[in-house]
Structures are given as structure tokens and as C-alpha cells.
Image (cartoon, rainbow, N blue to C red; front, top):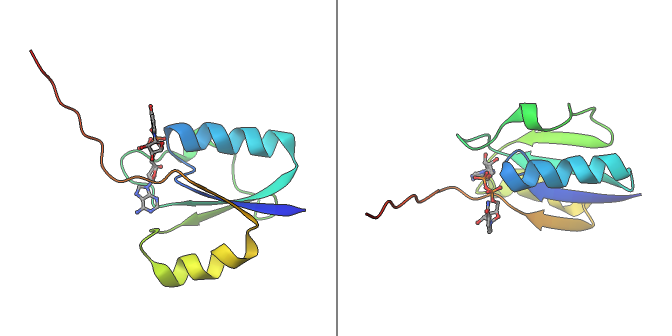
Length: 89
Ligand SMILES: NC(=O)c1ccc[n+]([C@@H]2O[C@H](COP(=O)([O-])OP(=O)(O)OC[C@H]3O[C@@H](n4cnc5c(N)ncnc54)[C@H](O)[C@@H]3O)[C@@H](O)[C@H]2O)c1
């Protein structure tokens, strides 16, 4: 079975993507998220350590990424740090 790395998998788009992947059961999911203000564990199924592996870490942590990335055949990068909101009148 293939393994998909999703960065930002607890965010708005990432959590929907992860829910879809897990529901289809065609890939194992490594969900890599720092859980900033935007990340929410309640929006994704609980990690079971088999089909859904959650890694609470920063994508800027090269060592941690290097541990997880090689086991993954697919990668989807959705982690982003800043949300700019500009109000105009
Ligand atoms: N939401 C939209 O309408 C929209 C539209 C076009 C493109 N995008 C792009 O899609 C991507 C996801 O958007 P979103 O709305 O889901 O964002 P979001 O802010 O809801 O989620 C981002 C996720 O990334 C995680 N994250 C932030 N910094 C991290 C780090 N250093 N390491 C690991 N995880 C980190 C956060 O905890 C969060 O779970 C972004 O690249 C965004 O630019 C979004």
C-alpha cells in the first residue's frame, strides 16, 4: 500500500483532504502538522498509528521531515504559516 505525506493536514483544506484519503482506504496517511492557530485535531479522524499517523512537528525541522519523507510515495504540501487579512473600506 502506498503512503501519502500531507503537511498541514489539520488545517482547513488539509483536514478535508485527509478525511477523504482515510475514507477511501487506498493509502496510508502521514499527517504532519505543527498545530498552529489554524490546525485543529477535532477536524480529522483520530490517528490510529497504522492508516493515519499524526506527526506534531514543524516542516522547517529538516531532521524530522527527513525521518518521515522517505517512507512516503506521495506528497501533498498544504502547510502554511501566515494568514493575511486586509480590510478595505
Ligand atoms: N483556503 C483557501 O481558500 C485557499 C485557497 C487557495 C490556496 N490555498 C492554499 O492551500 C494551502 C492550505 O490552506 P488552508 O486554508 O487549509 O490553510 P490553514 O491555515 O487552514 O492550514 C494550514 C495548516 O498548516 C499547519 N502549519 C502551519 N505552519 C506549519 C509548519 N511550519 N509546519 C507544519 N505545519 C504547519 C497549520 O497548523 C494548519 O493546520 C495553503 O498553502 C494555502 O495558501 C488555500
